Image 1 (cartoon, rainbow, N blue to C red):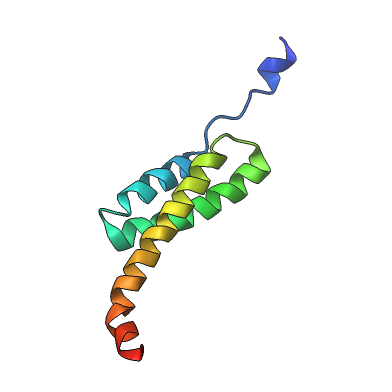
Image 2: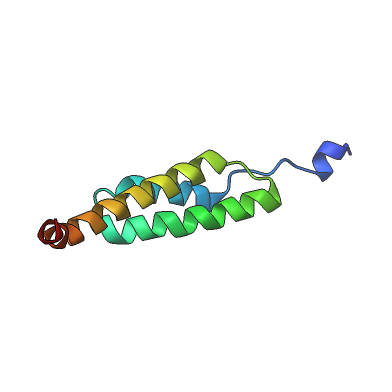
Length: 86
């Protein structure tokens, strides 16, 4: 038995894939998917740092897209009040 069999390479982090998918869906299902993308993205980044799994790029993309969708929602909610201030 070789050492490669004893120490298999880690696979993909499932939370990073969920984060990327939720980040894309965040523009279609605004609030829930955006929040899910940010939460799972941050959690995936922490898991990837510890375990060495693949998926850091997906976690970053999901977190960024989720954050952008939440900022767009926040802007849409606050826009009427921002116009009155200016």
